[in-house]
Image (cartoon, rainbow, N blue to C red; front, side):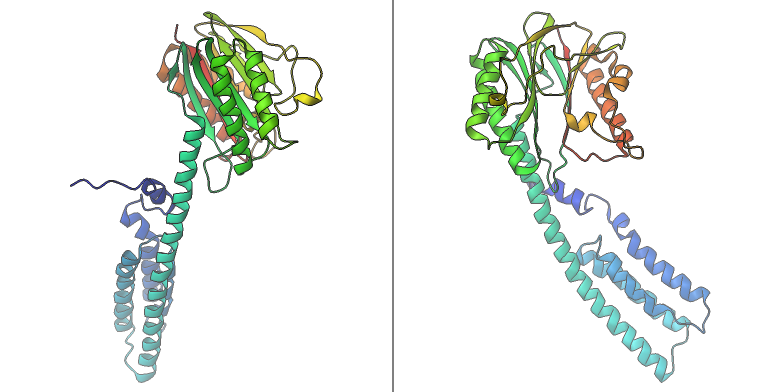
Length: 374
């Protein structure tokens, strides 16, 4: 009979190293047994180093389950007996010393088994939190498929929030009666407060995108919702895009990172807004109205959208920002040919970003590549 796996099981296995085979998790403790035994043997019979075997339970408690720990520590106990025979521990003083070492070893073994049990309980709790956060992220973002309307998508999303996969960057792609509409945003701050703001923005976008005939109307609805439901002083940078006729797109920018279009030859076109607008939540401070602008978007072009976490990622040594516009051209050139090429392209950009930072991002980061399927 097949037994259903708990949703937290994969996360628990990754967090507590239980996805590794037993021999790999036991290797540090077994290596400690071997090193102590070798040290005793090489030091000669006039030195008795077997009591150093007490390090084995402590090492085993880091990676093994309680039952596995007892089994590995039994190997260490056998090694202690073997070494005592080799070192000829036979007089009364040596025997007392051996007895004390054995008692210490057994006590440490039992204590380490308890520590391993506590470690696994905490890992299970951490895995549960991580799984709930991931489920909340998926429910919030409602991840689109690899194709929406005439668009093909590839995305990488990384949250910098501690103990969680949830963050304040947001995106949504919807097929509506007014064309295919895209929203990308970056909420000021991190953690649950940023998630709450992202929920407000995404909820408003999903409603307005179907109702409003133009992007300005969509953005105005979102701005009104943010003013009602988000605390004063909090804001969200955003970029909206609309795809109706083949070969063209319409853009609307609210203080967000400028989009990039890469053409079939790999040339990079940074699409700066002719009249940039303030972020969502700060509209009351501005005068006038935001304006949209049109851009070509051919069948072999790649549109690159991202958040500040990408372009403000610092070099691991020099501290320089990641030069996305300088590097992205050759990394995504030709990605419009197929879904597989597009997915490989976003992976190349993400890998290049991690190489720039040394493998770690300190801020939420969203990278979205879009091409046309028509």
